[in-house]
Image (cartoon, rainbow, N blue to C red):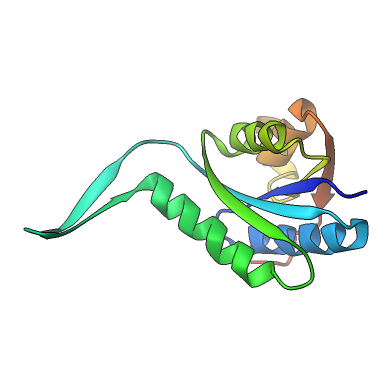
Length: 142
């Protein structure tokens, strides 16, 4: 296949399980895996004082999550990562468009019961994705 597979992560066990499924799929298809973590605001905090100040933003936190997961998945395939602004489903779709992805991988957490009625990231991505969507079984991950 080659091309790119996009997966979203948020630091949870279920997202990690979806990312592992995405890695396995990328390896089987000869694709690159792009790990995305969403952030929803431009909130920043300043730590330290004087010349020893660090500015930490929501974007930094999201990028850290994506990088940590991407580094844990590397080895047999090429893995890239980024932080994307927006609600998780919107951020995944935006990154899939930007990367010209062939597949978006999402977990099936909250696709049962009331979450299914109110909507979930997986449902939103499945209905709006510009490419194929693979829904990984992430139950029993947390």
